Image (tube, rainbow, N blue to C red; front, side):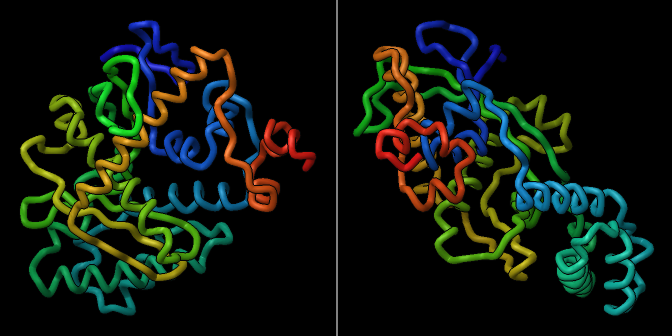
Length: 290
């Protein structure tokens, strides 16, 4: 694969542009925030929500590495909840762990009753994949690029399950589920499917994945709302991600052609509350909010 970077110059053949799910999300939120974070590498303090997310994700990864199917096989539901809960750390997030332990106990018993315990554990647990994809200059009817590009995708899939010889990636999210999050979740999962579909076979095989098995469904789990959702893949979501990539590429072209910053999406109340770069945002400064 080619070298890749966030500090990309479209006029150079290499390194090519790196795109992750997080960087794409940052650009969609606000292009100038993306510039500050990813191109300029400005650091921000970790929020309580970020620390919580990292801790819960790490604990969940460790849980799957520790759970013993044979040990759990003959346990009652009550015993399963106690055992599964014991595999989580004591770190102030016991409310979330309790929900996940109870949910896992129910899923375990369902799998046992259907003689599917072999599929209870994911085939991969926190796997990082890399891929390259080709973006034609006229892919997005609303955005014509200077030329065709190759970009580098990189991402970590929380879990990948197998059902009826088909893969199902599942994303774990801390926070409360709201229906309006559906569109963004579909885009996140579409990014992972695109990453998987374009990943070289040898990398997939190294990570215990079979290149001949397709991703047909995807889903997400919000334990704080005890909400799990799985659905067939949506081609429209994949198309939306591709359009977003062309918008990102165009922003780089415009930045270099015009020697200017990425544009800002400015909403005074929202930005002042949620953006770490509010005090240096050109839009906020121009409007007199800072």
